[in-house]
Length: 158
Image 1 (spheres, one colour):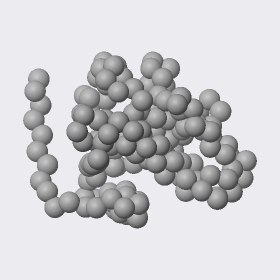
Image 2 (cartoon, rainbow, N blue to C red):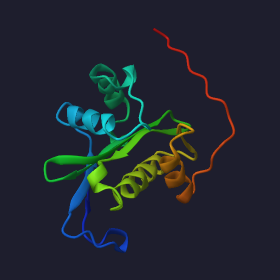
Image 3 (cartoon, rainbow, N blue to C red):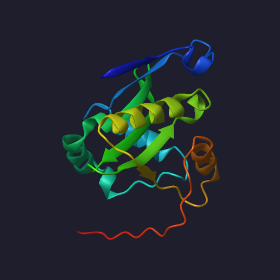
């Protein structure tokens, strides 16, 4: 499915003619708009080398159907990047432009991403949230995500 139309009645919420839709991310067309969105989303999104154009190109070769954007007209107002390694799923970045928040866009992006992961046979999904990102923590916990008491380690390979 390339496009999922979202309109004024999604989840029963009236959206005051703010029609938007979810579609697959398109490279290279959407890259800069999504990077700009993530860069201005707040302190919760930490961009790094894996978010550069060459790295996103590699990601798109692997599972392009797990990178979704929400758009209104020609503007990208939300985006989520997910991944699946054949066993577990991961949500890398979710953001909605500040002036489009509280309209169900993030929930629609996450629901569609979860549906696509489920269709691939994914049974468990993880995401990372910084401890100080209270807004994101509350958002995910309200939607059934559970906080795990684990340590996360990372190592750069190059």
